[in-house]
Length: 508
Image 1: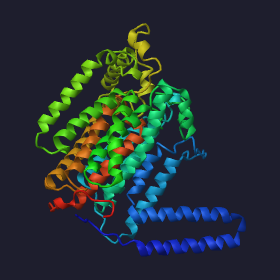
Image 2: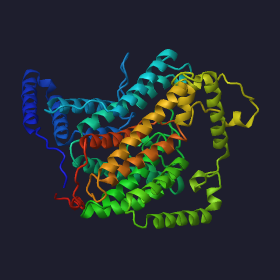
Image 3: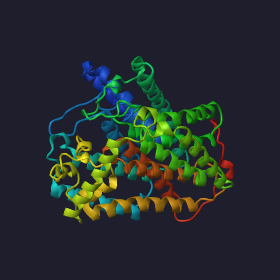
Image 4: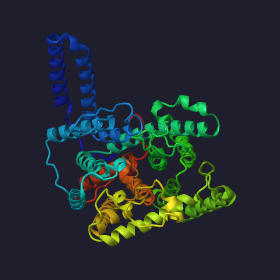
């Protein structure tokens, strides 16, 4: 099996832990009333050091998954003149500290930024300047945080996590641990999704089994929670749940080929449970992302032999399903699988028109990042028109690229397209660098998982502005960081990956 690097972190970890134990003992003797909390802090520090020495990249995934388990209602600390603290934000700081400690203590040359990283940095710099010019807060009170929230949490923080992941990837175990952690959370996501479906269609008492209980609040999450009538998982809307499950399905297919033992059987069960759970979200973008990802997997993630036949068979099954369920699909009832909601369709068309109106006013630089809603209120429209009724209460663009066009102009639109294009080109180079016979953890199949993450993200971005959706943003950028890290490690030439690396058992 390929080994890309070895860690020698144990001595330093023990030394730091020894210092912490000594400090805890001194504090406990000097200030006895602090004794319980001092030992709690020591335990937290021990966990921090353990995860950092085991696999520092796990902190990125812990941060992403915390949005679906330990979000705002559990811990919300308001600090005047500073950002509000939540568990995901605290974990982000912990992750940055862990990555920083790892990079400082690793005696190696830290690689500089790659050309696609500079493109992303240039894009971020432009958006920051654009936001500064037009204002970091919006005029509409309910969306006052739109500019700075979408910049910092939607763009800057995920990209910093991407950079740290790319710098700290060392060996194939980073893939295994990350994906197994993702499947472990997947059981919880499925549990919540199925309970919500039962509560909506069979017995509302099923919500009593959901933890944390704040998930049962229709509008949890700063009062903007939506999609309560769907199985939205532990999130404020169904998009993160659907995109996570779509990605998880193909992660399961990837892992089933590479592990043995009882958990392999569990992953097969998980894969069968995922498609209905995606349907429970009632998200049309989720359905489409799942199908498009299937095409990518059939042609590049499976054996190339008979890939066309498999794709044709899958298309036939989908067509037969559409024909059999046509009355339900063409209904306006999302819980029954309907995708023909008229009001939402009219609203999307009206939002497209508004985006082009704003772009026409300021084609190069837009109306200001995060200020779509401010300018939407000033657009001329007939209050008696159908679109006006459909747009009632809709104050955000539902397409990432149209939002960037309206808010940051042609410059911003070209910038964000360049970001995704360069990431894709990087992954293609990594895919071609690896031999087709490699079947271990680091193989072409892993690159296909990143392509599926890209398909999921961009499909979702065509129907909603994902810069409000931090869990989906974080998931995509973590896959991007992992992929970029292996691209860095395999420079400047190709390597020989042994086919025998396949099917790694639990004991290896």
